[in-house]
Length: 280
Ligand SMILES: C[S@@+](CC[C@H](N)C(=O)[O-])C[C@H]1O[C@@H](n2cnc3c(N)ncnc32)[C@H](O)[C@@H]1O
Image (cartoon, rainbow, N blue to C red; front, side, top):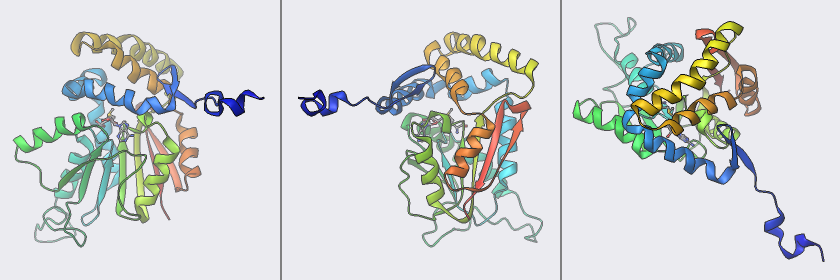
């Protein structure tokens, strides 16, 4: 009698995926990534500044400037971590628009949608990351316009066509099933809504690429070891950057998920890239 009849499940190969440079069963990735971000949460913001010499702040500013948030829109920030993108969107909405006259500031203090929900929903799969950012905002009495929720980008618990814009910054490469997340993102966008993704990508200048490669593979894990006492987590972070698809391949994944007008722009010679797609 064939083995497959005796032990059907044992004979089936388990689907595998990348966890940095290691191959692991797909079903383990979400919890292993979760463990990494639980560990890095307390020092996440400090480590970002150290590892990128502050460049992540400029990239995030450029990302939100390119998103062009407008008053009255609803935003979903996925894998939002400690809330940098959410705070920048809010800051943009707080700026008085020259079109609004008499210095009136629309967008934050006026409810959007029938339920009057805050316009920006900051979400992450990992409560430790969300809480690290939320505590700071609560301590500063600075929570206006923001709501929080634990959300897995692969199964977004909101109805179809709920948001004008969905963002994800430095988050998509950590997601186990990226096509599933992209399909979910498109589903929750309103027609005409936009998806903006900021992620590490491929450096386009060969000399710079070499220097960057050496820096990220040798120095970043060392900074993790010395500052956060956690070399392994930062080793994963740099390896996951290497494994993430380049600009063109990721753009194609957006098209395959049904996004229209897909485009990308490189920042810092492709160290990071902003990908954009629309639901039409
Ligand atoms: C590098 S941090 C980025 C945080 C923030 N967006 C920023 O730019 O500073 C990556 C985040 O992705 C989150 N993440 C990983 N897998 C996720 C998933 N399946 N759904 C939602 N968030 C996820 C992690 O918990 C972590 O907070």
